[in-house]
Length: 416
Ligand SMILES: Cc1cc2nc3c(=O)[nH]c(=O)nc-3n(C[C@H](O)[C@H](O)[C@H](O)COP(=O)(O)OP(=O)(O)OC[C@H]3O[C@@H](n4cnc5c(N)ncnc54)[C@H](O)[C@@H]3O)c2cc1C
Image (cartoon, rainbow, N blue to C red; front, top):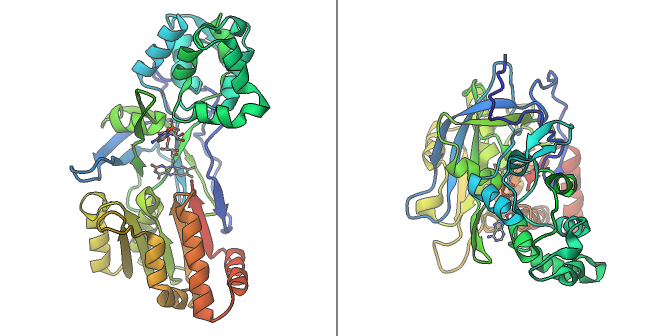
């Protein structure tokens, strides 16, 4: 039976969860029992492993984090774990000080339960990344006409539809603390603010382990978001928490998030090609562990990339073992900053286009995970080029070939 620790905000109404920006392909539906722990009723997991994967010389921080599971919590390679994060105490205190409240004030949450304003700011409301929506809501507060700092007129100007670009520019790199510092005095009472602020969403992390090898844990690969903008040092709410306030033994509310559209082929003899630069490699560690544990005979080809081989080759040792064992048939890497000109995974695909097409012709599934903004598009372009060159046809015919692959669930992406 799950015990609710007093410091933990259960039932805090995480109906919203950050979703993948795109997923393609459909896999056969998994037959699973309804989840006992959900984003609205999370499991109070314990961190059992939290180690940095990057080398010491690296300015990036990527962590391998293992989270304990309750008996009966099951996942399939391709699934994610949802984390319900909380802001660091300093960030909450800064907002409270700027608003002129102690944090002990009482507010009603979305379920009409009484919580402290400090709790509300820490775990219920989005006080991180600023959006135009938040500015608009803030400007509607009863006290807004009295704002000091840059003044009410300037605040109103940011809200008008004609000033969309200006508002976007203002939001970039800013958080709620910047808004209330630049335009102070709008919040007359905490409840009024609670009612208009966006809820804090759960964050998803691809599961990087096979439960066949790790029955009691879900392992993840987390890139810690840290940056400096507008004179403040910032961090991502979830990855920052995992990076500095989630040592071994710490507790974290989690739930499992199934993704039926990112699945290994049911037939273990089918070859697969996986493209996963950076943290995009996480689900492929799960795929490969699963195929290894099952002793499946299908060939496996992994494309991995990051900035530097010496510091960013995530799970290098395990890939080496898998190559030696034969689980990994082939691995191609692209370290963008180890030479004068940048090399990315899409370049490796182009260099190996003929072989890649031969794999596709033999029925291979093609998977992509990671950056949705640049990488996934560039990879798709090279995939189309490989198909067009391999089949000696036009880009249009290559697009039809790829569409057929999608239809057959042989082209699947989990990009964010
Ligand atoms: C299906 C899915 C799977 C995912 N899997 C993984 C995974 O395996 N590993 C992983 O690490 N992540 C993964 N993510 C992303 C992850 O869920 C979070 O989005 C990520 O960790 C950031 O969340 P955060 O709470 O730490 O940061 P947030 O508090 O959400 O802050 C992030 C925001 O900070 C701002 N920002 C960041 N850097 C800068 C900068 N330099 N300058 C200005 N602004 C900046 C941006 O606006 C950015 O959106 C996945 C996402 C999805 C949807």
